[in-house]
Image 1: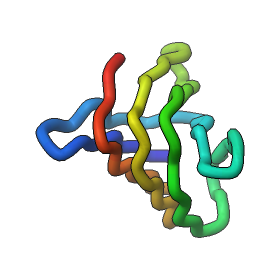
Image 2: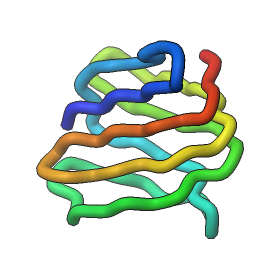
Image 3: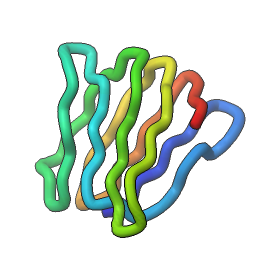
Image 4: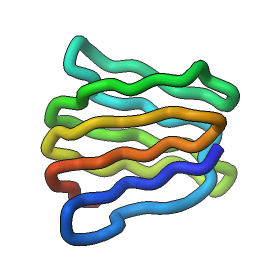
Length: 81
């Protein structure tokens, strides 16, 4: 699935991933390929991505995530690798 992490001033990540774990407002949750459509609030924490090339982690300062037809977009208030 295709994932983008965007902040107000830059694009932090864009690429293909096999799974992504998010710090949801009510706790951690994971999104896999062919996940049902979803919009969720995110709190401060780590977004953990798994891809064919390995694992990556980004610290976000909260935001929202949208999952729709294997496209995942994270609109974060701030993020760092």
